[in-house]
Length: 263
Image (cartoon, rainbow, N blue to C red; front, side, top):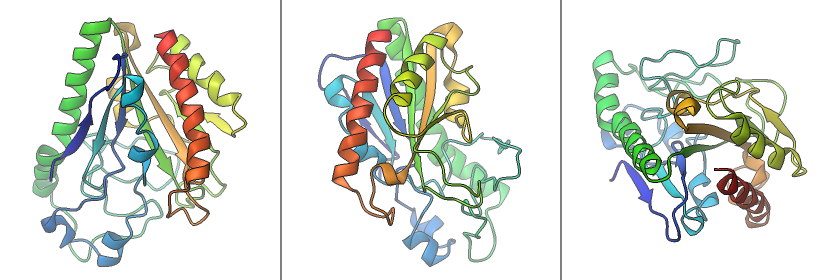
């Protein structure tokens, strides 16, 4: 099993890279054996079908990288030293998660040792980040600027994070520091005028990918878009809903059109 899929642009290339670090569903046998079978069968924290939702990227000239391994193997959007992204009382999942978002334990018995975490970091985590860095450097060398767009989704209600339902769309830019004002404003205006309920940097301001790669002073911009799964899945949030998906895909395409012009 490849660590990730890299989808190259089909048409004229533009300076945008889409990343989907949490849409992977695969568990290596040695990790699967340590996890509770019911958790492996239903890895609910997965960003289901996000890679499918954004599969228009190559037609628009954008590269896209998508992870194959599930985030419960190792979370590609966490700090490699497990420094918490938030300190507001929500359930915090580590680099190698030991619980789901609601605090339910994932492992049958012993949790991964420091040595096992380091093994997974080298085997599964670092190659994804290294490839993103390569893509950024190559794109910036070609265009002089680049945007990394990190695509995510989450259940509409996750009590371990907050009691209230999430908004439809949450734009994260680490409190307006991971991208230029022009890039941020372009996206936020498009989302805000879409008819969806939109928030900015709350309750998510971007994970480690957005925070670590975003460097607008060097013309490297990074944004995270979190969305409720009800935007493109059915009410059970287990099945892809084509009608809902096509509606949000239309908004995403219009937003990327604006971003291409801005960049």
